[in-house]
Amino acid sequence: MKKIEAIIRPEAFQPLRHQLDQAGVKGLTVSEVAGCGQQKGKEGIFRGTRYEIKLYPKVKVEMVVAGHEVDSIVKIIMDTCTTNETGDGKIFVSAIEEVYRIRTAEKGKAALI
Image (tube, rainbow, N blue to C red; front, side, top):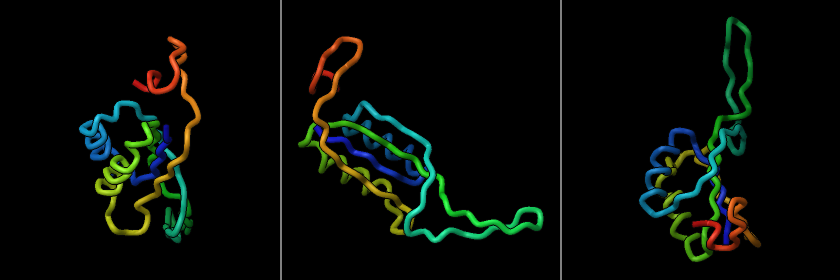
């Protein structure tokens, strides 16, 4: 099993959710986050006061899938979320040793379905 974490632009979430649903991905965890990377930040003026924005709003989408599904899901994320501009986000893939469903005590793939 693998965990895929994608940090994406907020406006890319709904199209991504639709594409993942079409691909059969049912379980997602979604969080509103803020972060920075290659984006240098920008300066704004509010009521005559200058301020600098260094953190940008993002959406973090997490899912645990079977190992053989990773490449196709990563491709869906990349195809759906790219604008070819700085700030499109990142995808992280990590190994998951085990998963348990709390209600039934099922483990492994049975706990994901």
